[in-house]
Length: 297
Image (cartoon, one colour):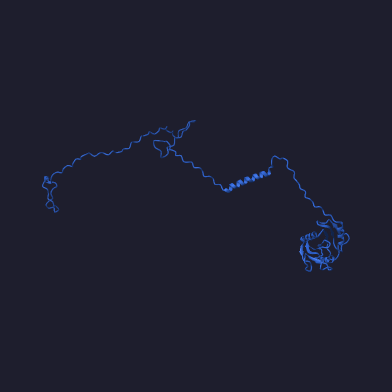
């Protein structure tokens, strides 16, 4: 029987002729040629098996509900090895020392240090001032200096007699008395009220030693008073003249206020005399006192 069977003649799709038998198919195929040399096998790397370490044998832990004998020490089970260690070694990982870093120095404000130093210096100074210095138990005696006292001026008897003779009218007997003269004067007298119209309540009369002393005594009166113009808008202080000798200056006139009281003061160049006439709380006023001066100078 021929294989494959030929298609029937009635098969319209049959286009090739059918071989007659097996011999008509041709010569058989040749076998493949043998290789000249055998291929060399490449070595295959096989990892060595890791040694198997038998786990350590531990005594079995007693059951939880088992009783503990008195005096028996209970040993807790060892903790399991941390993760990452080798299965066959329980040694801890190597410790790598870290470099020691010194802590940063504290930054204290400069003013704080300066304040501490200043406080120490102040305390030391106070201790040095309070504590007595050693080595000398006896204090040195205090030295006193005697201020030289100026000698009290003594009145000139002749000057006093002449002064009492120059006093104007209006004083009663005993109303005036001599007193110790101030520096630069030879005689002085203090008087009470003058009974003439517009007369002063109190007055002083001083005989100066010379021209310079006369000016100094008069300036002391001016500096101790409040200056005002004399009645009639007369200059104060200013020169005054007698009616008998209008071309000759007889002295200096001053009008002022002392302790809210009118004051009239003047000098007499010919007699080296300084006079201070002062009103009282009840008068006279400045105009009245000025009129009294004009008739008693």
